[in-house]
Image 1 (spheres, helix red, strand yellow):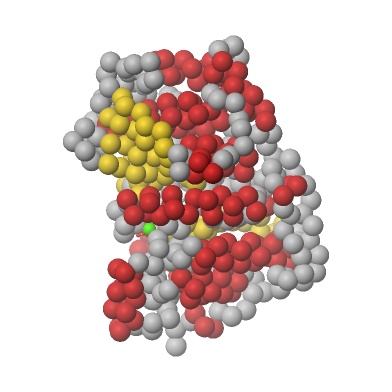
Image 2 (image 1 turned 45 degrees about the vertical axis):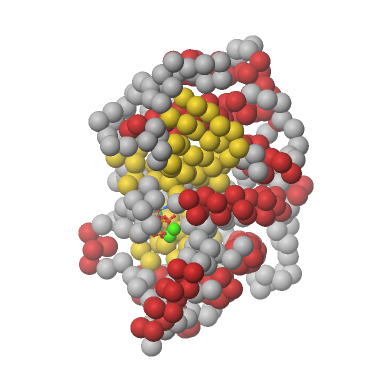
Length: 434
Ligand code: ATP
Ligand code: CA
Ligand code: CA
């Protein structure tokens, strides 16, 4: 079930965890944010900040309702990513994640057992990740950073923070904060999770008819005869960006990632109110001091923290739009994506109400469709277990169509499939079953 969650109240099993996550983020992020911005150093990529919370509090951490430890990984790297590359307003970030309303929980939509939580305004997602994924993200953080820097229009998951909560009995929970690809104020009428694998990649159509929120898969896309309706200009840009992103994923040797596609139909509009009706008011007991300090930043306090934060906000001047330089055909060879100088501009594919408007062959808007696209679940290396799965599943089914294949093959197949799903892009035959 995409994007519909249960609000977490004090009686919820994960209330304490949630409270600790939010308190940790709030203290960790505002601590880093209070300092004057500086260029990143090599050490920033391996830095960790530890916080110890208890009900008494001390000069470093305000008192909290529970005892727990919080670890903030590479805080400066994530701050720089948020502000310089992903155009996140620092005060908004803190407010979204920690102000008045607590998050809603999506439960565990995937097979992995990860939990997903939305910020109260649905802009951000917290995903709990396994220790292996956590270690992996840290190990490729530098490469990820460089990729994002060189590719302002990347479709890869936008990681805004990496943290750990340790509960008194020693349980450690790792989590990332990332972008919600889907917009807070629009219904998504169809959702697809596409890999380019076609074995077991089908959501039963009978069930889909009854559940408009189902996450459909590759075979549903093929059998429904769907196409991404985008004109030559954006098609070329999207193809080029997907090529770069899949090359990156190949380089870091991961697999099992997907292109998440959300389709909003403007004619149907938002009458289903998919998300808004789940967003009921809930006001948890957050430490008053923190609520106060967020308010100060917003409302012009002269405290050093607030001044620094406002300065940070100004320096990350968002949304300056330039015109992309596009020329040539859509074979992805004779044009370039706008880069460096236009670094601060909003991602090309998130420009039309947070997504990408369908366009005809003359690049004019058509059909009242907006697509929301992104590459998700990118932290799965091709490990021993995945190799076993590869051979095991390969005995039963076509070894090139199963989900677990080596990273090079995965990336090539993924990219080919993504070209094939676009209008005018050929090559779908290979993915159809005989
Ligand atoms: P598995 O490893 O079994 O595939 P997972 O727990 O790693 O599952 P993901 O594949 O990351 O989970 O995500 C599961 C579903 O959650 C996606 O198919 C999508 O519907 C939703 N989802 C994940 N990330 C996002 C995002 N950034 N924006 C919106 N929806 C998302
Ligand atoms: Ca997945
Ligand atoms: Ca996963």
